[in-house]
Length: 385
Image (cartoon, rainbow, N blue to C red):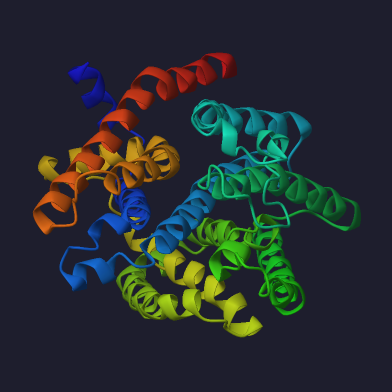
């Protein structure tokens, strides 16, 4: 098994910089979901974790757009700047084989563990419409972002194919169409989010369970633009490679500083009621600044320090499983144990408890990946051939 793990970590197609971004994304998400355990930690450390989950999920969105957009762009170019039904079908099959097995496995576990608390319209979780244009029930909370991902997988090739077909009738489809379609989707979804923030969100503030990030951040149809920033980035990397490479350090600096500034104000956004314009543009700027990190990170193919590369790459590999189990299946259960019986509020006891939580999260995720997720991926490759 050790040799098999080394083979997976040292895969030829892996880009360490992108693995590093995925590593930080999942670490931030887990930090955010387990933040309640750090209440007895030094205050600066506890404050640091506030809002980390927001940034972690946005990193996943933009990175996913960059990787999936790259696949679609290659298929688009290969087929004469269009997509045919067979290519779309193949794209969907490969994406669904990658994401659905783990999702339905963990959804089944949630159903078994929280049977009495399952939502009234549970069927929505089976087709990823639990948060289509509404805030999701408080059940399998991590699934809200997966619904956004799946909606983008379904929508993106269709919009691109229809646009290419229209252009072929009135002119000639060109590679730049991929860029124009991605920008158009960003503009349309951003406008839709502004409408939601100005017309729908104010009416929800009177609800007793009102939450800005819950009722805005997790609504699928107004958050898809985060993924299309990754589409724009992969197009620019292909057709403007000189500027992409020449200024990658400058882009990274601007993006990093911009993210820090946005995250500094994220607690106020979550705790207060910002204007519709601020609520709308917060996610737009966050996605934009994250996309500016990609030119530098995508250039780091490998690093020589195996003590860094192996754990970072492995956490990146099991990040999907970690994302699915770290919250409701581990953090919620730890919370119940933490607040029952013995007082674990001291920093030493809390530190031990926190370390146990992380160890269990990584161990279970590794087992899911090795014995379930990876076999499903291998099955996908066999069926594709």
